[in-house]
Image (cartoon, rainbow, N blue to C red; front, side, top):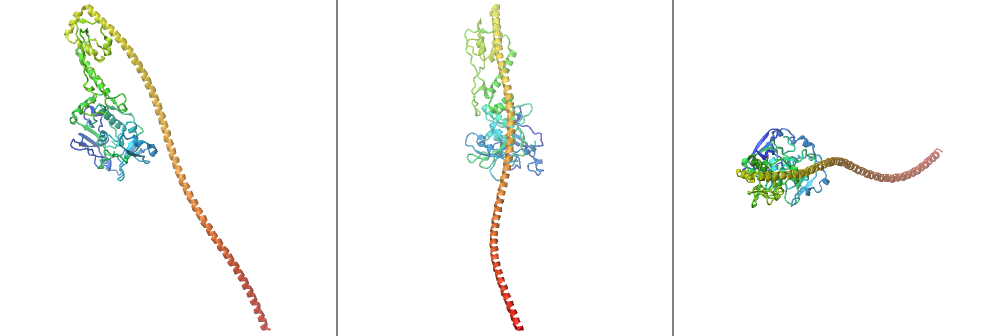
Length: 558
């Protein structure tokens, strides 16, 4: 993503972790993802890029049986805190730009890793950190430039560190704000960052230490209506959806392969100071006008240095007989819009004077209007233009040897009066400068005190925020434990209710059997009484029969 040269040396540099395998993307060949990637882990680019790409060497990954062996252990320790749908209310709308775009968001399962691979069945999805839209302003659908960056780096959205996303976003905004279209021409696999190479940096990191983002990710799937933001009609993903084990570790661009406007713009950016990406993303204090002012001031300083080295420092100005207007020029770089590429914002700038003149005259000036000259709105003075060009105009006025004749015309008295006038206006200028700079110094001290107070308040608020977040997390943990205990209690109550129901059924069955046995017992008792009566009757009959037999025996014996 960076040419080998002045400007883009702060693009990703070669990683020091492991060997690297080179892949060269030529202008006639489209970008291809590394081999043996899982489904949904990489996608081909629909464009071609003129640069050389170096991927991470993954030959050792196939030795280990663990399919996630290439993932950094720190990544495996992190699971998402967004495991409830209530934590994602309004998130689907917040992460999408205004338009027909729609997606569905869903929480992660407990212990679900951000590096998990897609299943062969089901809808495609990818993970997204909530810090991308809340702090960096990155929303779906990804722009063509952002998708191209993911394709060329061969990383999923969560595989690129937020500071890397900030670099991409600031780079994109800087190009668009200056009327250009962003262009790609211009380790143990953890959170990939766009490291800056030594000797040249373009942006300061968004945050020096980006924390607390690794455990706040969620799933994004295509919406029920509107265009699909993940895959095209041929089911090709617009960018890698899951983590890849062959991310790009180095990209080199040859300046000769760039277009003329890209080469020129890259060299212009190389002259800029170190820009804070946070201010560019937030739109604070930085715009195309501010950048052009920096460039214009640098050019004026170089021009003033060149001219003062050749021109004399002592200058005598004369009042002209007929003041002539000066035609002011405009800076070529101050045009509000470039004709080469569309601009996202239109910045209108005031034209500045490109030259200043010293008018000639034959009489000395006795009432030279230095106050209006120093304010930049002189109408009669012999020098016109912005205050920044005053010294240049004065030096140009008597740079030639022909001006020395004016001293002879002024003679001693005129020369002394002119010098006295210069001394008076110098004193006035010094006092005005002391007053103005004293006020600026007071304002500076006041701003510094306010900034210090704001920083203290910010630190206190940050501390309070951290404490509140810790309490909220502890409350969430306690709530989760209580919910788990409640579920267990409900399950136990259900088991007890089921056992009571079964016991009641058994008791009812036993009571029914007891009733039947009671009836049988009563019938048996009645039968027993009948048997006793029959037995008694039989005994009486037997007794009578025995008596009859005795009587017969006695009769026979007699």
